[in-house]
Image (cartoon, rainbow, N blue to C red; front, side):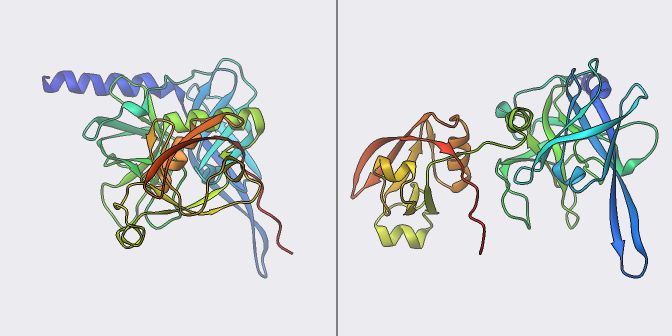
Length: 318
């Protein structure tokens, strides 16, 4: 493909998503000893998800904010309410009082390939004059965020520049379709940024809009990855599945007959080599549906159907 043609596609991709990119001003109230309360303003990015007033951004952008205001590409500044947020995935859903917003075109993040050209768009550093665009490629897929507890969904790693203020903005392909929501950059590295895949964002946004929270399926097992030393102990191949370490009493798995020592090899069509794959597989089954599980017990492979339920709230400590 000639260089000028690539350049033209990049320009058209940025122009396509531009109207859907909004700025978010948040105001938090802090307290300093001896000085009393003080305001802490911050700027970031949001993406118009639906015409009827819904926008997506990062949970860390809006968490604890006393006031939120969205600045649309057409110059309007509208107060926003937080519909709901999910700390585990760093996704939050906002709503403004408008019915004519320019919704973004969403792509298919399941079809992303390492090496694919992408563009990160957002209000980097809160600079005036509209959103900025930075070019890069998909560096890796299914990544955890370094230095933190793992995020529920595997992240898209990119070398497109993601700076403070970009959080909540779109990562788009060369057609202008959104394939991720920019979430973080690693301060001690160069050319390492992360985005939440859009297929995960859509599912989370649907839950937040319907329930105000993310409804996650639960089957009631605690598992351990089969690292080499664990696999040798049980006479298994490393990463051949997930070892069931404990089955919660009266849970769906307990009623279905799973036992500690079983090795879960597949949930539905998805092999389960690690915890992230198990969570991804379970997320494809709505709460209340039957989850087919292939597991190994004493050398033989068996299949059981486990009815999923909503993940229970953690018990309050005494």
